[in-house]
Image 1 (cartoon, helix red, strand yellow):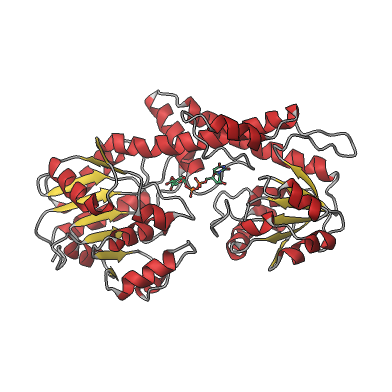
Image 2 (cartoon, rainbow, N blue to C red; image 1 turned 30 degrees about the vertical axis):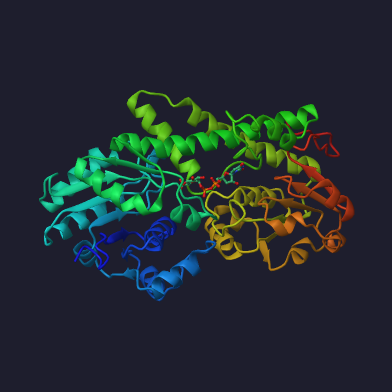
Length: 462
Ligand code: UGA
């Protein structure tokens, strides 16, 4: 039965990571019956009980609701999934591999298993690559492997690319109400199926070649990363020139041709996608003899921004040896407990290497940061004490560094300042407004706020 009682095709999700789970729930929220599978039994078990395995706003509620309605079911084998689902979405991880290329091993494994499972079922199926894969992968790698493993021909098996644009912190909203749907299918029948599948979402559908669809995903992330990097570069000019980057970018972004979003300067972009995708894109470009200089530039600027931020901290505090530094915000951005590529990790490593005593705080990412920190070689050089409250992290601190702008930090309390040995905040996101800082008796050195800190030895971050 690949159709639900409603007559709608059943959706299958292979890989219940952040993206797979949110995408599956997006379909369930629009009334589809969804079957989910993950290789990890603990994830299957958690989702099966209606419990979200990740921290993501709205995810537990939506999962519980769809689970109660019986629309989201977990199966234990890919055979069951392939038997029951008409449209099978591959949502497996594509981590960074050698030289920045994506590691396709998890994808290849799922493709082979799905292909084999397809041998024992009848009827047309569409297999859709939702994971981020470099342009050419769906048509050049996935489709041939699927045809081979399943023994089917293109007529009996649709293969398509359908990238996702979910951002952490707003994944559920992005999955339920996408701004656009991008489809790159090899055969016309798969296009018809996918267009029908997405009709209830009411989003504009863009139909391209599979490589075109894959390129939309990389171009989007490259452009967004470039926007952030541009703002980061302007933050450094601003510090040199005595301007405030937020004021500058507010006026720049007012031009609708530029747009105001993604122009918030900070410690450099993090997260599991931008760095990985830009590296993969630049690498693929080099392989094809087409340099993708904008992606290379964004990555370079991102490295420069981190180096700048470290110099900025060093200059603002002076010698860090034996100093107590509170590191506030450990996730790669506010609103998530994800610490992948979080700037908090290299900042903590730098502080520890400089001899500082580091206390970290994050409303939700303490455990994930602790686990990631223990995996870094820097953890052998020093400890990062993880605190439950901001006050505890600030106790006796010579400085605080605000890395991720959780709203509670913006409402800085006077009692917090009082706990510090020296009332100095190095604000990497300019989250604490001057009026709030003044009321709280706090000195703020903000990256991009328009002035360069100067340490006792006269060092200026340039
Ligand atoms: C990003 C994209 O925004 C999504 O559209 C995409 O689907 C996703 O990658 C993906 O490929 O899976 P995400 O990594 O969750 O989503 O996070 P973003 O909100 O894009 O932020 C990325 C980084 O840029 C964060 O470190 C954030 O702090 C930084 N950033 C973002 C800034 O420093 N300034 C900004 O103005 C915006």
